[in-house]
Picture 1 (cartoon, one colour):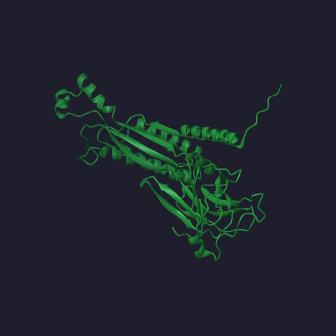
Picture 2: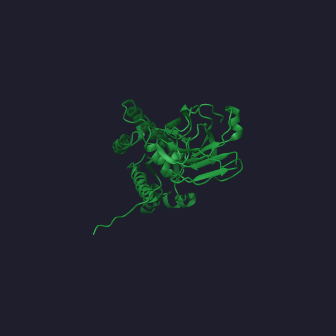
Picture 3: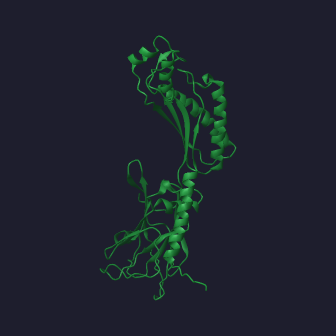
Length: 363
């Protein structure tokens, strides 16, 4: 006997969300790489010419691995971090014959490796093998093995070749290394927490348009790169009555915060990383915001044609504050009863600047 299983819209949504979540997690875990360079400079040296031949040979192989990783992810947002370890042993610049402060030798060696990597990036970009140039950072790391001058001189002062001295120096040697961390920023990470508001504000509306909006036919789908993030319900059931009745079938992919005071109606969404990733996967390094009217069956005139007020805010992870990218009335024309998708404008992939449209910006 066949069993028929009925799935609701919410069931389907949960299934699709789980699949997308798994894809994102796999991508995030599968696109990070650490490369260790075998060997190091002799004490006090840092220029490429002074790098031992065996280490140069290994570095060239590792540089090839870096190139392969980058060309396999040509449009990804990648950060290369050169981690250079330095022990607490006092260092002396043997190339310029002068003393060095703690961390200087690691920094100089990091600059040498960075120069070689930047040259390889120039080569890859020149051949069109990568579109997004990775960010290259240097991270000097001072080792944890504590240096005690009197103890060191007691063990190694008279005989650097003794087994006791060798054992002690081996501890410091573990703190000396060069490795390169390559991390791919997860799609959508830079627009996680992006906040989008679609609203009807009577005071602002009257500064641009001659009439006010007093109807119960203000339902719009809100889309980003074609992904339906939610439905803007700008209905008002009379001058001072709130909230309006629930319209069946409204879909919210991202939880909506709706505020109504009779005259003004505001719907706000804050993107999570998963939704942002889906949005970016549909675009070419950009984000396009659009709305689409929804006609409610028991109403004869159809969705209204008043242009909504739109605000887009990007979350700045450094200042931990929201930065307004756009706020205003997009320069669009809506037709009463039309369910045509209308583009409001486009931003770059990290919502830092406007690419097209989004006119009348008050930000």
